[in-house]
Length: 365
Image 1: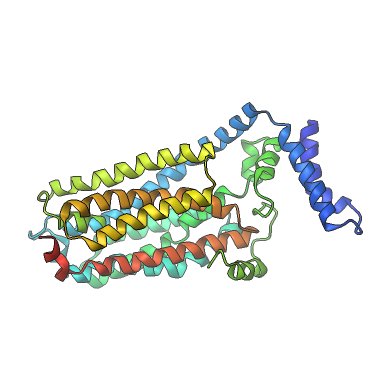
Image 2: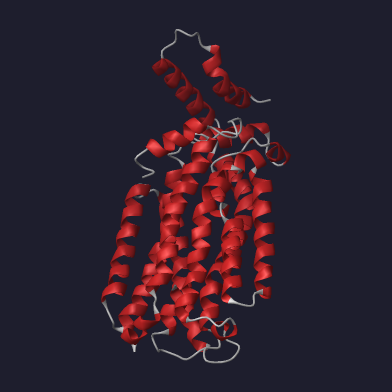
């Protein structure tokens, strides 16, 4: 094995090798120097090759999983406005009012919030590979069962179980991307030196493969940490076009989001600004357009706000989760905090659908 690999081995055993009388500052200083020396032994070309290998292994699959998730999520809103006024419309088939249908999304998010943290805490015990497979399999089964729904109660039940089965997917992916470079399966496509490099590149308090599956201490530390602390319906009511052509109005917000995500990834890679600064700019943009959306009745202003508000909202997740993941500590702490903060964010998914009551439709006519 190369000398660089031996340096990597020294990093993990340095604390044990030093005498008990060594100061904490000395331990940190020596560990930092060893870490720095090991990382500097890799050329820019090697760094790029290793990261590309990881990207090719995971990103296409993660992207596919997330696309499927969002198709399911947005379809629940889109199906409400399809075949409006006809016997085949879902509201007529299930004998539901528009306001009752709003609970389809709210119930889904309530279940998501309840089971998000427990699901993510199982990630380390079951391994990300097995747990994400369980999520996708059970989620697919429940989704298929939607076809058998005969009334609104059945649809509510199906959406509750869908949220339960899907809970933990997104924060699980976030936790997985900052952990596990030394898992047994990684040895099949990464050399020991590459595994060491990926783990050493992580922040000092990042989760490690050797961490215990559960730590109550890390959960309590996360709770004490102060850092812890419906598009189709809108576009249909604007009157630009009749159904089903009206669904084309959902394309610009999605396209703007995709282009903005690509730009954000490029911009962050140049490190012109710190991640927290980028996050604040994105939040300001999203808040501005959502305030316009809430304060105007002009249908053109509403649609423009929908496009740009959705764009800023979509971009926000890239720098936030990347920055947040690097500030967590331990496997359990990472899994718990990412899931807990995701739960807080999902509260909007419970409240949002209830804001689009049928008696508000006249405001945009």
